[in-house]
Length: 269
Ligand code: NAP
Ligand code: MN
Image 1 (spheres, rainbow, N blue to C red):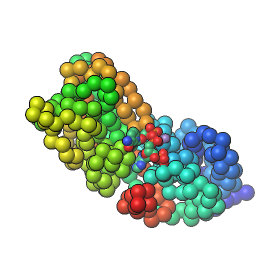
Image 2 (cartoon, protein in one colour):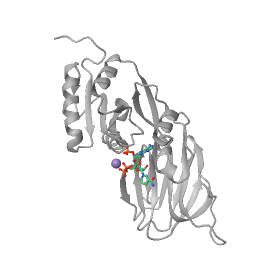
Image 3 (cartoon, protein in one colour):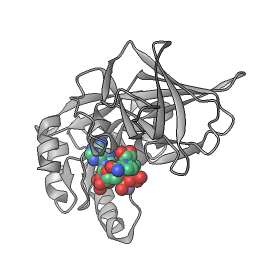
Image 4 (cartoon, rainbow, N blue to C red):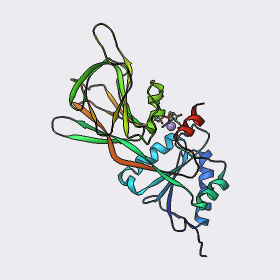
């Protein structure tokens, strides 16, 4: 049977939270997508459909990070917050109808890059929401450099560096600003900074343009954890971390007129 629609032959993948509750929906979703002529290809999809919440979207984005340029993401959520997602999962008919209409806008959200370095080498990480340097047990001492110029010495629990789309996540809990993702910028917010007659930081969220970079240096990163979205790494033997906005972007397919401020209102008010 020849099916004439915009999605015929399109390779798709489904990434779900993996619980029994979403499993049934995912099964139905596959059936319907195959019916309209789409092809399931978990390895090399063009369209990635996530079923879960933002946590599931974060996992999906990291799963396809190596070929992020070739993939477009669309999210359906299962009763969680779903800041990144457009569809409520109960409404499968509406979801399929919308996909078939082929009326959408692809929006690009920038990634944050970190180079975690010692004197011989660096490891590169990318994040969609944010990266944090955290030590919940001992006061961290971190020197902050902006574009290689010394700026301040931070004492406290940690620092959060976030993207515009991540600005509504952990950054928001820290009192950071919400930044529209059309603004090519990244933000530095403090986590539990100590301010007294000995220690002083700027104590305000700071927003940097794309061309800037910040470097965090510590004499001892022992016991410090680097979080990368939902993941974390130990920093032990590293000396400095350089953060900058990546040239790479994540593309989201938006079928509804559901821009950033509408998402903010829907999620928080
Ligand atoms: P999680 O439970 O999946 O995420 C925590 C909450 O943040 C969930 O309600 C999630 O929505 C929501 N969320 C994620 N990205 C968002 C965004 N861009 N805008 C608005 N809300 C967003 O926890 P996880 O699995 O560890 O995921 C890691 C993320 O949690 C991190 O990227 C960080 O932003 C966030 N986090 C927040 C805090 C805090 O606010 N104190 C602390 C640690 C981590 P869903 O319910 O739809 O998944
Ligand atoms: Mn989660």
